[in-house]
Amino acid sequence: MSKKPINIAIIGLGFGAEFIPIYQKHPWANMYAICQRNKEKAEEIGKAFGIEKVYTDYDELLKDPDIDAVHINTPIQNHAEQSIKALKAGKHVACTVPMATSVEDCKKIVEECERTGLTYMMMETVVYSREFLFIKEMYEKGELGKLQFLRGSHQQEMAGWPGYWEGLPPMHYATHCVGPVLALPKGEAEYVSCFGSGTIDENLIPKYGSPFAIETCHIKMKDSDLSAEVTRSLFNTARQYRESFDVYGSEKSFEWTLIEHEDSVIHTGEVPERVKIPDYAHLLPDEIAGFTMQGVYDSDDNQHLSFIQGSGHGGSHPHLVHEFLSALYTERAPYPDARQSANITCVGILAHESAMEGGKIKYLPEFTLKK
Image (cartoon, rainbow, N blue to C red):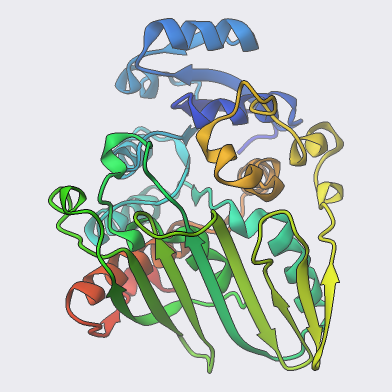
């Protein structure tokens, strides 16, 4: 790409509005257009942020030759179709999680990226959270020693969320716990085995045919002696919201706090110590560094549900934007790119299939692995 600012279009303006001011202030971006089906809401947000290009039809937006990249923040069942349409229209794609809800659609996105040479990045928040960046820094400095085991969990009560969430198989939205356990060792999942446990309310089961309250998956890393375990729940399980990961090394280990906003723990040998996680705004351009601590949804009467149940996503939003723009600006692959995004997403999809088949081992398809 040329070194002119990258024209960005944001699709979906609930959670998506959080990213508008970050793109507006990033030195490599031009916050060019927004898209929302509700015309009144779209125009209101356009006026509030000074954005002239306002679309209510996604297909019309994709015809705009001046748009370089789209950032998709729509309901999960729309992600694959909208990503594929954008790639076919010659646009780079950033998409909120998950990549897709089927292995087949993940494959289509990977194939379209490789056909076109365009960039795809799944905007997985946890792998750019301050907690992950803290542990990544420790690991890269050698402080953890040899990685021995990783564990992730994402437990959440989804009652009150939009109707398409009702009865969703827990592992179909597993990227927040799968992402960090694969990203830290820069690994790939080779195969998975998963068990379902407990049951959700009977009225929630028919939509997806998934009965389980909790699904727990073991992941075997490819070309490694490492394995990981991830746990996911969505309904009928008593637990404060938790997106977490634990990392066990030969020298030091990290365990996520059991109660939100309390300190996590570092174990040095057998000696535990509570640790304050620092912010990592210093890794960002000055113009967007402040967004690790605040954003659009930062007042009590203006909280998006993902922030009420998500603790601000660990300050990850400006890091995600910077990674995507940096990849485009310097013509390199982002993390996670299309294949890596597919590997992370397909772990969850195949894990649910495994749970429905009593824990049967499921291998990740070749298209989710490095060439």
